[in-house]
Amino acid sequence: ELKVEQNPLFLSMQEGKNYTIYCNYSTTSDRLYWYRQDPGKSLESLFVLLSNGAVKQEGRLMASLDTKARLSTLHITAAVHDLSATYFCAVKAAGNKLTFGGGTRVLVKP
Amino acid sequence: SAVISQKPSRDICQRGTSLTIQCQVDSQVTMMFWYRQQPGQSLTLIATANQGSEATYESGFVIDKFPISRPNLTFSTLTVSNMSPEDSSIYLCSVEKGLGNEQYFGPGTRLTVT
Image 1 (tube, rainbow over the protein chains, first blue to last red):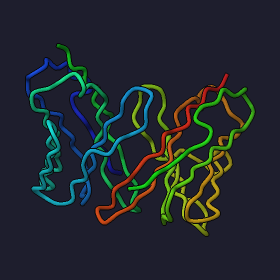
Image 2 (cartoon, rainbow over the protein chains, first blue to last red):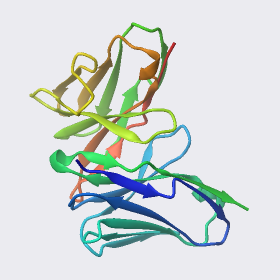
Image 3 (spheres, rainbow over the protein chains, first blue to last red):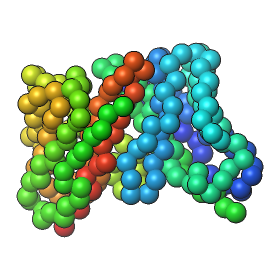
Image 4 (cartoon, chains in turn cyan, red):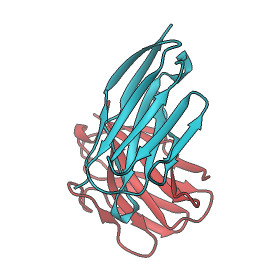
């Protein structure tokens, strides 16, 4: 059974500093997804990582994938208040279904 | 991308009753998924709904409790039957589209059972 673990579960950030969220998964997969969820809202797709060594960047967010280590990271550069949200990673298993990590709640303080 | 709508957006229901949630997509998709997000928790897949066949349920979810219909390639319903307060959650439908197999989520249905 595929297991997906995120850490940390909660991240208090200072504006302007850099932080990383980690996503580990237990079995081989060729797709890893990152989503953002604002309170009371649905999930917004951030990145889809398709292969080993994949790196994608959008604004202050950068995601990477190491399929050999079964690890993805979401790096936040120079955090700003607008990035406060909960971030989820999800891994695609057989049957195209996603298994989600527990989420990382990010709070960016001035 | 995909534009997904869900109805209702929220509801408050009595214990023992049933609620049917609708999911409409703006284009044809092969696979639709139903997820549950309990308060403060992550998402858990309930079932995969394919047009023309029975839904495939995940461990811990059964058809009698969560019957699903998929009458065509743009629409699906999830019914939460014989509700109890433990069913209070956000229910989200999702579809897979595009070359990168992106998965898009609907706005969710926030269900409170009293």
